[in-house]
Length: 121
Image 1 (cartoon, rainbow, N blue to C red):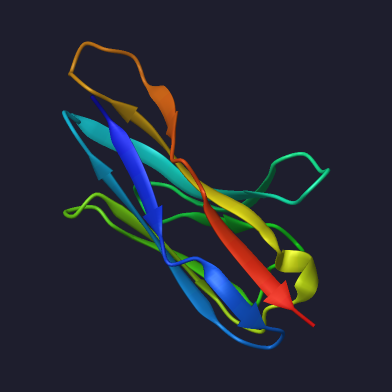
Image 2 (cartoon, rainbow, N blue to C red):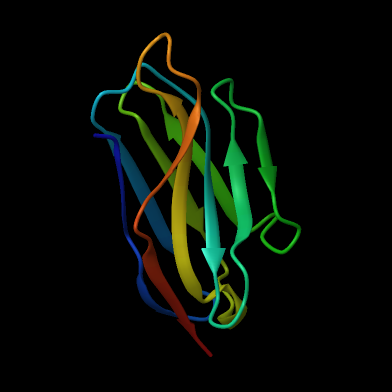
């Protein structure tokens, strides 16, 4: 049973910083892409940042220069360092991972339960 568990969310004032962590556990053969997504109230879930197993990174335009994604392949973790936070960054942040549980299984996408980030003005 694969699980992704996020941590590090909370309430912060505008201009502040937070660091989100996501740990993957269970029977995992290999992890490919990992990423962070967010969903604000009344809006669709959107991509925030993604990172491949080789370290190639993509950011949403709205967070470029303020957020930094990183990963530790040995620990099966992905992180999101968020700085200069704005009220519009408020939402539930989800991590995801494309992974295979065995050598013969296809890649599947797994999601965490989400962690709330609230930025007050």
